[in-house]
Image 1 (cartoon, helix red, strand yellow):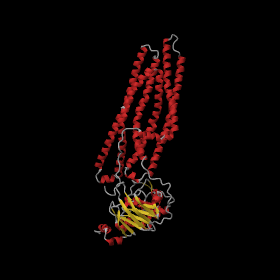
Image 2 (cartoon, rainbow, N blue to C red):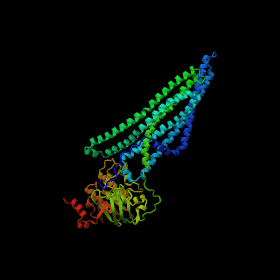
Image 3 (cartoon, one colour):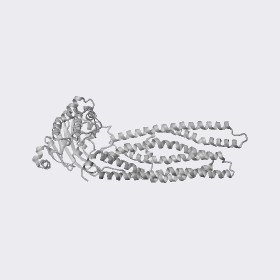
Image 4 (cartoon, rainbow, N blue to C red):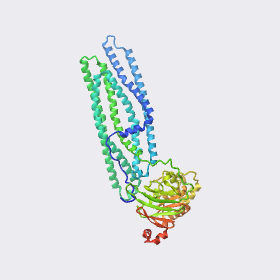
Length: 600
């Protein structure tokens, strides 16, 4: 592995055996909503009670009609009307209670999903950059959209149904045994077959649900990667290879999805078969008891028990259907809580050190660092830089130039050594305070969806149009902005029809507006033409006056006027001095410079 390479990007996690530990973690996460859930459970129990006492009245209704048919006095219509009214009231109350339970659960689950998204968004601010180096952007997007949506849908639908179904299940079992123990035993014994099958299916299918969520994240990562740079894909005729790569992950996703849906889809028809089988056995056993002269069973009891069997099979079917959603939610929860459980940046609330009236003296003291624990790439780097100096960092690709800047900004923590600014160790300062000391202009531009004004004054308040005009004139953007239909209020974004040079000019203007005491330029003019580069260079010279500035450059012509040039190779400073001193020395810097201008 090349010495400067960052950790490899992770495109999918290890497949774990089937379990619901992650879903249990999700339920524990929602414990703050326990009072509302208890209220929903009580309503569900009330609704279930109303549902399961109905068959008792239906049994009475059946027997009243039967007795009336056999009686010389005829059917007692008043008694029948009374039973019908009672049934209507009972089922109406049950419907109201069930609606209340569904409403509470829907509210709770949506609030829980909102909290989950907020926590994930906040987590991204506390994660070290190493996490983003080893996880694709598309996979992170999939976590915060697909996985959270899957969890939200399961919580709002399946969980609510499970609460009411469980209450109905327990109540039905009680009423069945109260009505007739023999028929209850027949019904439950039949249903045990369905439970046994369900357990087998759950064990086999969970690994396919896990794979499905992982592959969905992998697909999102590839889509983001390809469509984010589709012009490169087209220019290099990579579209066929990209399509093959997409087809590969798409096929694997299809296979995992098909297997998971096929296996989980077996549960519903099997449970329906078990329910229908219980009806048959109830009639066979019930009729046998009636013929045998049993006083415990009559026609009304048999009719009531058929309804109880239907009520008993209904929650079983709901369990089977909900298990599919819960399996998906379990797989999604494993990924989401895997992200939420990632190690965070250290808490710095106790750090109080700040640099007051910063001058810009920077000292590197024997710093050592590696992106991977066993791969050190900066080996004892030391340098002492004075306020107001323009410091150029040069060297071949992979020498560690950008890594030095990342360490200076505390994007990564040192393995050993120290960096101080005006004598204050950056370890003793909060990261936000370190970042406030720097303007930073990278070779990779970044613009967000918004107006030019919003992009320029990014996170800075009170910037006037006069200041914007001054800065945009300095970087050569003023004429371009004047030609836009709405000037500074023109909406742009990363996909806007701006040249790379114009994007770079905007990011340079953004840094000039921030006006921090220290400045970092990482190939800041690499995407602009020569004439624009001269204009920007003049603006940069003005910007660097009185500031300590760090300039990373491959074009050595741009750093001739640097006060100090640090020459890096393989993570070590092998030469330092100004341009003339290093040329006169005839060392590695002289070789780099002469190689660039050998044909000039």
